[in-house]
Image (cartoon, rainbow, N blue to C red):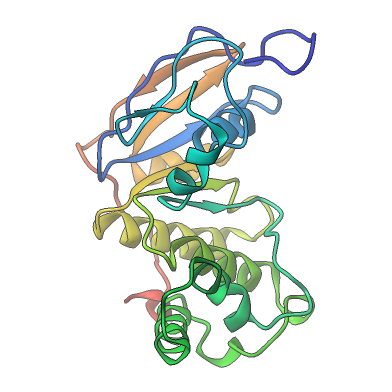
Length: 230
């Protein structure tokens, strides 16, 4: 993959994400973590090679087919991308309202249950400018999973929070993965990766290496916050 006439950011990489698997995506700054995630959530197409998702070749798929595929993917952006003029409830409800076909009362009930699950029972009606970094990230996570995606992608979700909040957030990702959601978390926090023992995809110099989970499966981080347990 390359941008314009520049050098290739990703080259000759190959991997498979098994349904229900959990992977960390690591690598130094500039290694291509965000670029790889953009390929996975169909924001970009590869300059060469093949990308297959949910059994479909998305490399040559018409643009009209991409929205259907994107609805099967949830994305937690590094910069949150919340709408400041809307409450936490309305930010999270947006994907369901855009998709249509659901009763507003059912949407609200579902959103409230999810916000309670992520530990935001008392912040549902708050707007993003009044939320802490950890609270914004949990709203972003809730929005990403409200439509029950098959694949969840998170770009440096712990990059702007303290170590305790990082563990709370990672606890959420592990619990979501236990529900069957294939999960990829890009992070530079190698200490947390080692602590949790998950499978690791490491980018370096445009290439990718893959290491399996140290004990065969992902572990919850130490000292998960009891208020975030579903």
